[in-house]
Length: 89
Image (cartoon, rainbow, N blue to C red; front, side, top):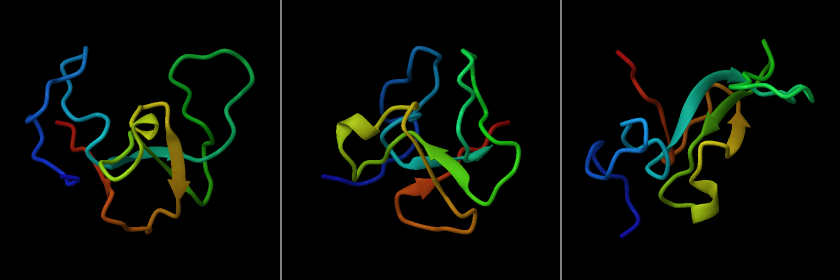
């Protein structure tokens, strides 16, 4: 069945984090924009803009989209069943 599931029902990734890919896309703090052509670690994209980034793929998309490097974007007030967010304590 294609559906969401409760966090922690699947195996964690190599960092011990659950459901970073494949459950729902997750909104990010980053504004969408082109990355610098200079090699960098953990790029954050633009410092301002009109579109926010979401990552990770969702249960209703192909396996190739279920990876953290898969970057999409939309208006910050866009809502859909395949989008969510992660609370960090």
